[in-house]
Amino acid sequence: MAVPKRRTSKRKKRARRTHYKAAPIALQPCPRCGDLKRPHRVCPTCGYYRDEQRVAVEDA
Image 1 (cartoon, rainbow, N blue to C red):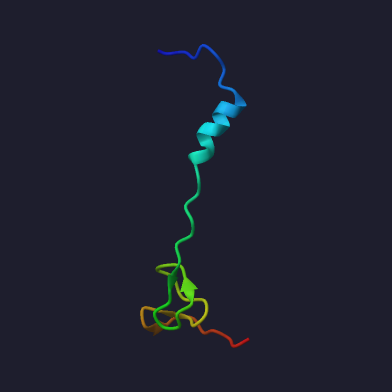
Image 2: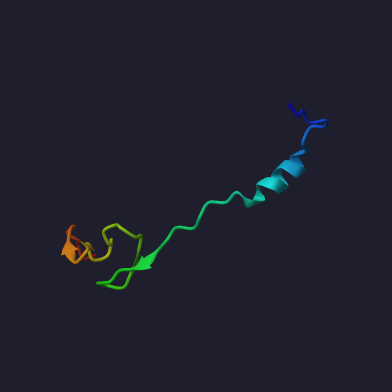
């Protein structure tokens, strides 16, 4: 089994990990109201999902 000769420095380790990133949150326009929402979820603005009202939304 291979054994490292030298300890990996903090700089080397951190440089390698710069590519480990969280993916950005996917957003798409709501087909009913046009506001951005996450896919496969009820629209927080109008309360609709798949042409059916699922949540009653209060007018602010």
